[in-house]
Image (tube, rainbow, N blue to C red):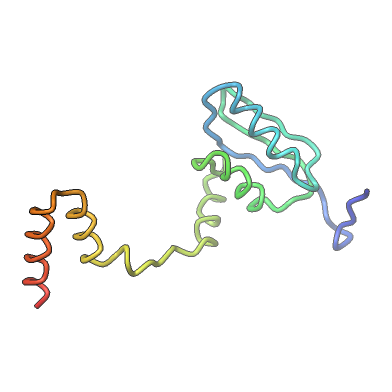
Length: 128
């Protein structure tokens, strides 16, 4: 099977990422995850610098998203690229998590029945 680029001027690029690696097993896991991506020619993992370099015809944000499935703290080596990647991801807006009743309920939920009932009564008094 041959990779056919969408346009004629597509060239391979280097994607450098800073990935926290805790052991040589992590190194193998990262290398295996990235080597299965389509269009990747080589993956170089430097354990001592905590640096992963990928060379191939790929979208660097897709590569970062793929590596974040294994290592959540992964980011681009170049700080300017990190700023643009955070702008592309929209912030998650969950009104239930930001509201005070939800937070009050989670704090009271772990208490005994008596304390829970008292907290619920004080919450109802405060809301009206």
